[in-house]
Length: 97
Image (cartoon, one colour):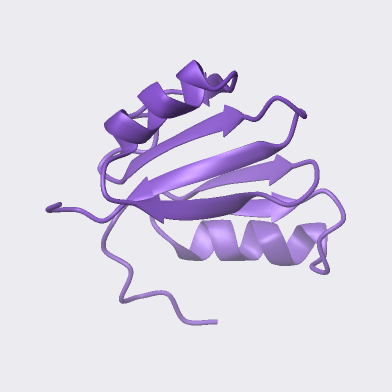
């Protein structure tokens, strides 16, 4: 794959039972300058919201637990939380909103 057009920091996230091979994942990481690679257990779904900060407050009030604070994926506006059942879910806010 060609990644020359990627001009922002990238975090490549794969599941622990992903279809790709380890050498393919590493090849992708090397092809994107400054990219990081992370392997997660299970599926990680992101939900687009108007405000990550406001949504985090609602999640905490409903029994969810913040596991990755806002700013960890900067410049992207994201956060991750566990719901009361233990599922890991990501939040994403479109930049400029």
